[in-house]
Image (cartoon, rainbow, N blue to C red):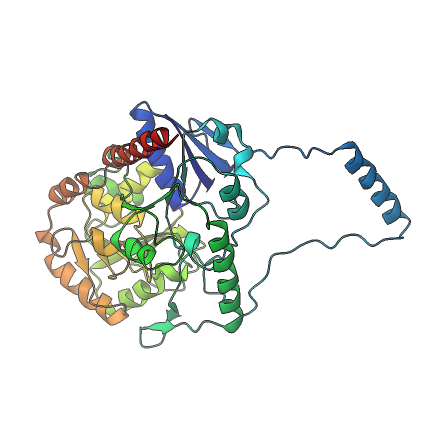
Length: 428
């Protein structure tokens, strides 16, 4: 059985997850390959997609030659370049928006032709819905890392735009131009999926499962809940004193850790933590922030910005150096950062959203706030800091190993792949 995993890029949260799955499958001696739109890293059994050169017939070549001559003589005007529709009223605080079409045809790849199972992951700007689902003849398992596959174009249907002066989220109002484009894209996707029967959906958490169940595009397809897994040999408990020495973090402070690809990502909620940290009003607490595009404006000696960390072993040292990892996301799926933290034995405090609710067990491996607000975050952090000595790092990791190891993830996927593959052979 040959498995082809498809992902747009080899960097980012979804890339981490699919690469970890790929590595787990290879360990089980499964013939797994990843097809990327853009590849920058040296990952075993992975390939960057190459478009096939256009095949022009003799008549097409003659037409093209005539067109060029007429254009040079200015008898005809050049064809206008087709552009994607833009959302004029889209707020700058919101994340990326992706359309369901692209200039790539994944079915042209030899890897696609040789594969028995296609496992789609984060495929924005890579998968052309219309072309792929019209030409595809193979079983497809689609792993949802965000909401874009079934939304009108947003990767998360964000309800909030940021934080107000009272420390509460600002409610978002969707513009009319947004609504029109959302509707247009949903119709386009619905038509592309109209006659598709060999599709299975994999979700990472219960929140996403519920979102899919009520969605018009995917609700009738089989849904499977398989959480992400991580490398437990890399993300593990490390000695706290040593970890703090490496990162130059004070030994005599209670350390709060925040991690995101970008500190300026509104959805990840760093503004809530920054404000909550100010309101804690204690010199005993130290904030360590990891993420690019750092633009913090503060005059505190107890805040350390480490920038973006690429090395996973160094990241495990950062988690081990912290007393608590805080994830104030306004909306999220199953964040890798939470998995990484608890696998390192570090408890987590987070807002009660998405898959974060699946991962945090109150009083066992962290605490959930009552709601999304600075006040609630301050109250929960205060409670945690008063009781942090009661958390058992070894127990936190032990429980995480039972649910989120790379081995468990690959076993669950393999079981699903084999059942679908065997059924497809019977149907033939």
